[in-house]
Amino acid sequence: MRLITQFIWRKHALERMLERSITRNEVMECAYKGEIIESYPEDFPFPSFLVLYSDPMPLHIVMAMDGEECYIITAYRPSPEEFENNFTTRIKR
Image (cartoon, rainbow, N blue to C red; front, top):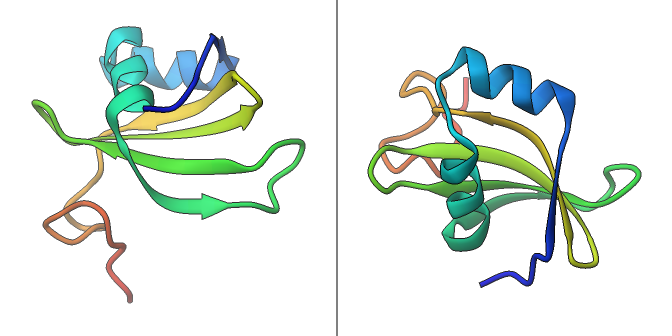
């Protein structure tokens, strides 16, 4: 489990979560229990990650970490048109 003491919710994430009927609890569970499937170490101002959690439905979040603070950038349900069946691998086109 990642050590997270505080979630910082970006406006974009909250807007998308509302549009997509994704709750804060789902996002926090994904952050704590999910699997990092992509890493973006060059992102500014902090490295970020694409995280997948699939209980009960697949959920992707993009989050950045600054020590123990977790910035939630966005959240969405992965599309079968963009990801393979396991939702961890992007379909190459």
